[in-house]
Image 1 (cartoon, rainbow, N blue to C red):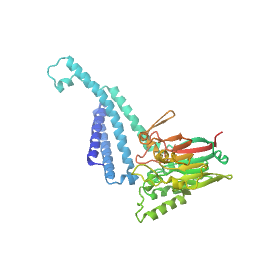
Image 2 (tube, rainbow, N blue to C red):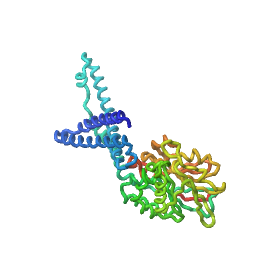
Image 3 (cartoon, rainbow, N blue to C red):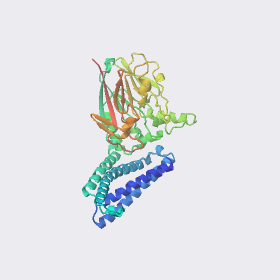
Image 4 (cartoon, rainbow, N blue to C red):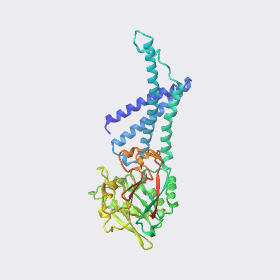
Length: 419
């Protein structure tokens, strides 16, 4: 981050901070209460400015994205900025009306000298109930973000999706797949809550458990505290996984002599947890003499800063035209760019990556998130040419250490044969 941009953000925050201070202070009448408020407010402001300082230093040193211990500072800064911005905008609206009224009254009184002092005599005082209203409205984003930072990030939701296919092998009628994605183990800070979320997966008693990438934030060691929990996940037909973009972040580059040992160790981690890692390959899932193909590709993305190692052609080698295929591909962009145009029909593609931006509205008839302006397919179920894509909101979180409206998700698919 350029230093000028940093100082611009801090300066903007200070303007909001000062305006908020005087706005809130105007609600108090008692001198002792005002002094106590001033001391408390100053302490909180210094704490938030310290968070700005830490955040800037870690981003400048390129360690913020590799050390999730700094993520709470982003939560502090964003919460303060948004809540004070809302309060300031509402107060500015009130003050603008006050000053316009004062100017109009001054003009009608036909004063000769046009001085701020003269105008000031005509400006109405702030209306207490409007200031209280602004405070309450500003408290909505404050409390909402605080909930997202503390409880919302572990507010696990199980979504059940029933899909019908004309060419599903009859033996797979009622076959269930549990998908979870984007664990981001390095950011998880409550093992009891993580265990509760993973228990929800086991409670679904699925035939398959599929994990669609981003096991860690940066380095493979981040998952070590959760390995026993992930090992205890049970599925009748096995557990499978693919890599996401974050799984490469802390890995040595391909030309680094350490790369081979690193990836060997990472692959062993999956094996130790009972997951088979599908790197541009496939397995056959059999049931009552019939089968479907489970295909997995490494991360594929159009963005230069994400690795593009997915090879769909290689993963599909040996597949017949009539084979029923379920594909795991971390980035949903892959679906429109490579999967839909491919000669082989992929019946169901499971992705993650977007997190639903960890912020938005997910109502029955209305869904919105900032991430939709970057990703066409960003959450839930999509269908085109008899092929489905499902984008899971993710199990963990990244960068912002919380979730607001876009709760962590476990998806359970039931495959049925269309009549």
